[in-house]
Length: 351
Image 1 (cartoon, rainbow, N blue to C red):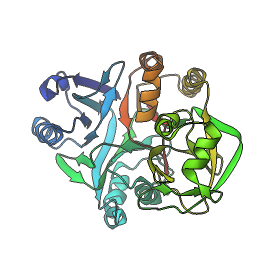
Image 2 (spheres, rainbow, N blue to C red):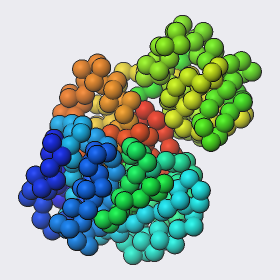
Image 3 (spheres, rainbow, N blue to C red):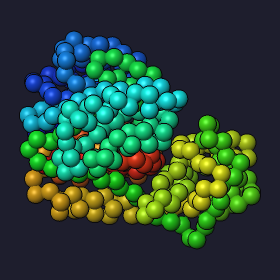
């Protein structure tokens, strides 16, 4: 397979698609002001080509912050793209679309990936999608776009998840997740006074969540939102740790980027040696693949901000670029199989 990446920092779609021929899947990453226009124009330029899109920054060895980016697969992939609507209420109502697309692509764990872009309510959406993918043990990589909008096959949707089932006809695929955090001390908290709909964490071990976080890390209320870059919460899920970022202070509680429920057991995380961790991820991928056609990744906005703040973002993109053709999306939450995580990176590698 081949992976195409085209950009326009000014938002000129015609420039971004220059040189793109015979695509079998197109992924659009646009800005909020031009998203609808870009979706419409893209469909006119490449009618009937499966496509999905969202609002967000993208990258190869460069970052596109406010323009437009195009990622396209060609030359040896089988693709079906569609959308599950009513993501916040009942995405399962549209599950037959996914079932048909999985059957159409007719892939397996070794050669097929589901890539998704979501407008929100990620945990529910991923549970719904996983209920279908698990029967063939197919992995998923994706993320949350901005402004509550996604696109699929030339149409814009709100409150939805757009997905593409992609089978690599000439080799294997494998999904990865990278976590640059580890447990801090022996802190363990039982969550209470949570609000599922608003993602509010009210208390930890019976004390106001804001107060607990401030006392342990010795930070002011104003510092909490930047401290979460270094010290997010974590929720233990089997052998995995799901990272939970703090979004804002809410009275004596904390609003998070993913749902926390009463009686959830949380730990406190701290930032590790991310340069070393990135090198280890690259080494792991190289051990798994002797030949790489493409890497598509989703990096959290908070990782982007952290890396930028520490003058590491460009170095990171250069290092990932040593794998070959590496491109991706800066998301507001990352998807890895049936997990919705924060402050992480998920990616899919194509042989």
